[in-house]
Structures are given as structure tokens and as C-alpha cells.
Amino acid sequence: MKIRKLLKKKFIILFATSFFGIFFNNFAEATILNNGYKEVIDHVWQIVYRDFLDPSGKFQKSDWIKLRKEFLSKTYSDSNEAYDAIRDMLSNLDDSYTRFLEPKEFNQMRIDTSGELTGVGIQIIKDKESDDLIIISPIEDTPAFDAGIKARDKILSIDDISTKGMNIDDAVKLIRGQRGTKVKLEILRGSQSFFKVLSREKIEIKTVSSKVNQTKNGLLIGYVRIKQFNANASREMRDAIKDLETKKVAGYVLDLRSNPGGLLESSIDISRHFINKGIIVSTLSKDGLKETKRGNGSALTKKPLVVLVNEGSASASEIVSGAIKDNKRGKLVGKKTFGKGLVQSMRTLVDGSGLTVTVAKYLTPNGTDINKSGIIPDIEVKMNINPILQREIGTRKDKQYRAGEKELINIINRKNLISEFNPDTTNLNVFLKINKEDKVFSLN
Image 1 (cartoon, rainbow, N blue to C red):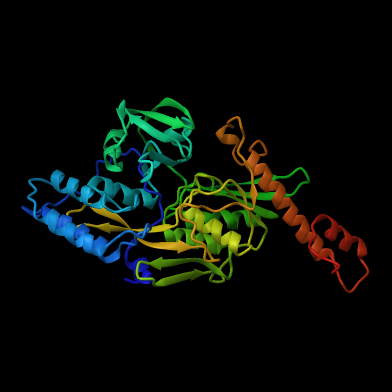
Image 2 (image 1 turned 30 degrees about the vertical axis):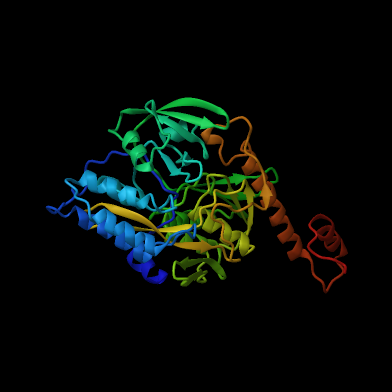
């Protein structure tokens, strides 16, 4: 199936495998046909056989065909046995992002990507090499974020149950629960372990927040933070830029730190808000079919841009960051990004459960595959040694923001000096100032 068809007909997501500690009552009940459990198993098998892109290169269709015979030769008495069999079958794939979701979990993921969340606000991945459960990033303004959970933290136990050998689905079952109840996580950060008790809550998230910051020299800077690339992000981003443009900002700081990703189309649309022409991202299917997305002439601003990134900037965040960097539309400031260059399609199964399956990998405009390697920023800056308050994020007390603002001022000044220089006149002072401070021109 061509990627273009996938984009039109399937729900394409770029989350690092995620879980928000959820409990949702109003879900569509699964309709299990009598003696139809094998149908669900075979449905999963068929999707993987037809569409799965193996990031490791180890997938062999002949082995997968043998597995089908093995799993369909067994008898399953209920959905739990069938679901366990599906997870067992998928464990043969060397891909953390292809995973099965029971009906409630699948329905919640669809709600999550629509812009509504319930839970503790963490997103995790199972590292195939170390077998660790690793937190991608806490979502801002959630119990996990407020408790100080950080990207790359490892979960050692859940309510005193060790996660050693535990898969993501089992972890989900332990973390999820009713709103208002608590879950205790044992966290490993570096060489130090500690416990955090988090409340499960309904989380109201506004995807995009923005404000005007004024520099010491009086420049107005448009600061925009995107927390997640859900279905509302592009519209909210458009509204924020239009509002900031009316306030005559001189440039933008786009904050994608600790943004775990979301919808592919959302990342493309938001990139187009800044990039008028040029490649934004290319996707490659398992059959080598390439789909390239470009700017469509609809950019909302041409003003200078700096993007803040860190270890928790993943997938859709990396698409935007890679597009900005490779098109030389702006500068990246912060720390190397997470490194998730794979695209998942979310499929509904015959009984109301679901499957997220890796169907493509994406390349930055320069053709770079960033999976597992991430994107190195133009200017590497560590975050504050001592934690800052939430309200101080995106202010000059925020070390990475401060560095980003400084670079943005340099870009704005360089742009202004270039516009002042007229080669048909003798304004030599401007020429020398540009050459000395910004090295835009050379006498050679």
C-alpha cells in the first residue's frame, strides 16, 4: 500500500509508544464472535505480513508464515488468551512500536490523539536491547510532570511489582486505574533510584501556548510551545502565529522540548506554517515506495526562528526540527533529540481492539535517517542544573531558552545589518560591522 493511500485512509501516528495511565468508561464494547478469537489473531498476522516495515532488517516472511500456522493451530477459550497470543506473536518482531491494544486502550489512544487525555501523563517505550521500560517524556501540566519525572527515566517497579521482563501491555494494566487513585513508580535516573507516587487524573491539555517576551534591548520575541502533535495542534499553532504577528514580534522561539510526538499530518502542517517551499519530510514504505511532503506556499511568517529541543523531543517533533534545520529556516538549540524515525499506522481490528504497526520510516529533507541517532542541535546547551519552576520555562531563567533568545537576537541583528548594507554606496561602516561580527560577507 502506498504511503499516500495510508495517509488518506489510515490514522498515521508518530508517538513513541505511549501510555498515559488511563481509565476511560465510555468506550465501545468489543463485539467478540463466538469461537472467533482466531480471527483477531489472523487479522493481526495479516496486517504485519502485508504492511510491517522492519527497522532492524531481521524480519523474514518465511518465519512469520510458520508462526501463523503455530498460533492458529491452538484453541483459545476467551479473549484474554487470544490477546496474550497476539502479544506473544508480536514479541517475535524486533520493534517496540508495533503493539497490540485491547479495546479500551485502543479507544483511549484515539481519544488521546484527538486532543483529550486521562491519566498520569507519562509515555514509555520498551527498550529491546536493555529490556528496560523507559519514559520518553512527561506531558506538561500532568501529575508526572509536576512530580519531576524526566525523559530517559527508567521504571523499575510499579506498585512494588518489578518491571524486569515486563512488557508494555502488562505495565499499562498496572499503571492504569480509576481517576483519583494513586500509583507508585520506582524510578531509576542515572545511578540513583527513588519512588514517586502519582495520582491518576483527567488531564486537560491545551496543545499550544504562546506569549510575547521582550529582550533587554526592547525586541519583541514570539515564544510558542507545542506540547503534543494532536489533531488540534496545527489549528492552535496557526492561531498563535497570527496573533503574534499582529503584535509585531521580531522573531520566534519554538519550544519542542519534551514533546513526544503525535500525528504525522500535524507535524507536516506545522512545518508549513514556517517553511514556504522545500522538502519537509520523506517517508519510505517497506516496499521502498517514497512519499515526499513539501512546503505548499502557505507559510504564515518569514521572520527569524529558533527551535528548542531536548532528549524528550521525539518523532513528530523531530520531523519539524529536521525540516527547520535542513531547510536552513532556523537554528536548533538545546540537546540531541530522542531519535524516533519510524511511522506507525493505527489499525482497528475485527473485535474493536487495535494495532499500531510500523509501516514506514521517515527521512529529513537532507535524506538523513535519525532513528536511534536523533538530531544534533546547531547549538548544544544543557538545561539548568537546578530545576526551575514551571512558570519559568520560556523565560530568561530557563538556560536553554536564554541561549535560544541570544541566538535569535544574533540572527535578527544580522538580518537587519544585511538590509542596511547597500553595495552601490560607500556605507563601509555597515559592511565592516557585518564582516566583523557576523561573518556574512568575505573580501575574498
